[in-house]
Length: 327
Ligand code: TRP
Image (cartoon, rainbow, N blue to C red; front, side, top):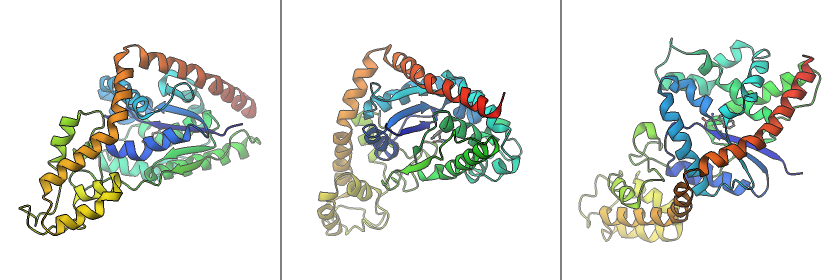
């Protein structure tokens, strides 16, 4: 029997190159080894975007197309939407009963969200209980492992604590303690050198056309001391283009570094060639994505199938959880 994994992303924007090379590549390769559940976390998106709910539906479609383009295979993996499977909310309620308020208040990832969004005294109950809903997502499929980014590890630790608490309180071994599957890919810098993020406006959106990507690439941060082509560059001093080059085509990066330092390679030319590397890397993605996008019913159909698959496990888990609790 294959081990089961569950992961999810909030549909709050278009996916960028950091998602693609990091999390998505990981998702795709895990499909061989695991029984996979990939979830559009639209209820989690509502915790902060409750008043922009219209955009969530649009991003849901874009995100699923990005997943399919990257190579998630609906024939092997369940691709579904959180709000389509009501058992998430059901298990959440059961878990809320065994969750001390102090646990959610001290969760570092939630604290960070509150700080970053300037919410402070304006935190809704949904956001505070974010980690409990995430634990419900994972536990509903009795997932043994969860592919996530490093920032999500505190949430996973929280899930493990809830698993232990549930099993101990109700004298059961229903839920396994899920372990994180971290991707080794190092974090991709954004065009300005800070972490790549839509909210910082420094991202390379994977569904953009090669033209748009090339234009965006021209805005990337390079060595400010290199004004003309023949100025000696310092690519190690935070040049984003050089970092992209190393990640995308490590074999040729050393040569480019030398040429930059010797004043033989200018920033504009280097940006052009790195933009071409991105286009080349994303070509199979664009081709697959376009094929799915051309079929207007495809996403809805895939989500409906995914929901069926997810519901089978979800209803079974809820039945067993009720039995363990004795209600
Ligand atoms: N919190 C995750 C994020 O922001 C999204 C998420 C929701 C998730 N439920 C999950 C991830 C369950 C893994 C497992 O990226």
